[in-house]
Amino acid sequence: MKKAILIVSFGTTYPDTRQKNIAAITRQVRALYPDAVVEEAVSSTIVRNAMKKREHIEAKSPTEALESMKKQGVTHVAVFPTHVIDGIENHRLKEAAKKYAGAFEQIAVADALLAKPQDYEDVAKALWESLKEEVGDFPLILMGHGTEHAADASYAMMEQSLRAYAKHEIYIATVEGSITIEDVIARMKSGLQSRQNGKVLLTPFMLVAGDHANNDMAGDDDDSWKSQFTASGNFDSIDTQIAGLGEIEAVQKLYVEHTKNAIESLGKVSKSASSSAVSALEDGTYTAKFNTDSGMFHVNEADSGCGTLTVKNGKMTIHIRLVSKKIINLFVGTAADAAKDGAKLLQPTNDTVKYSDGTTEEVYGFDVPVEALDKEFDLAILGTKGTWYDHKVSVSDAQKN
Image (cartoon, rainbow, N blue to C red; front, side, top):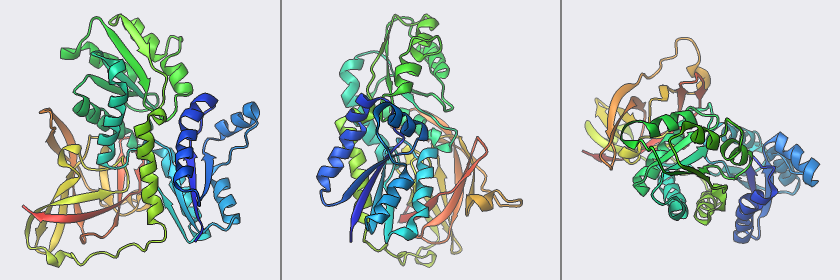
């Protein structure tokens, strides 16, 4: 067995921040796995071209790196995405890895930074502990990239997790997502959270502090976030901190931990579905874990990764409550089949969740039919943008209520 690790980032044209973030993570991986082939890849063609022109660095694309590994006789590959959310870039990477499944004995893709509910809690702790002294008593505003992908809902969940951990006024807005900086400024100026005076701190919620952080957030143009806060007239001082998530040691460790999980899966045979078939459960209601393959699609944090499983006349259905109303339909099957005429779509219910801080929120819930416990199945999701996305889910650990 010859193992390899492919570290993939979108890339950045800022060499200094690249060294503090991507290179720092790569050094940790090389130190942990000295016997493995470790290669880096940059998914952005624009960034690769800029690196070649400005720095004379020939960065590889993910497919070029996988081709290189194949030529080196690698048999098992762990792909390590440095993406923050499981959005468009991460799904493209997964698709690229699938195409090379036949070129290696095994290829595994590690989770993005925010993949499971626990990840949000871990990142909230790591981020707040690194920023709390700088923030002080003033509001903190984080700049996320955002996406038209349904994974955009991850930012709202991250904001909730940060507020729950820090007990502080924290907001996340995005450059290209549904939550804009105009939305955040309006929220801060209204209701009990209105602040007529005082400081705010702006900092990126991105792996690297590149062009978005330096220009869109902290730049002097009229449409930069700093300028928009100044123009609102409600804040005495707008401070910026130009540092990416990848500079935080605790965040680096979380990324590496995800990679460890992928590496440890190499060479292992997946466990077959357990014998916990439908017939093994009596009719009644149970609390069961709802396992997904992505941070963009999972149950609400208030439910701790679980849903309510109902068994009636030998048939199982699990009711799950999601993090928002941004996923509007589900389909048991693939995205391709969901888009066909006559597809039987699962319709949402209006559910109210209560968080640990006592606040409530109305979200969508769904009743999902379950064929068997511990058996992975396809479940496609439709976001408000009108695009279907494929996911793999399973239901496990049913406990009688």
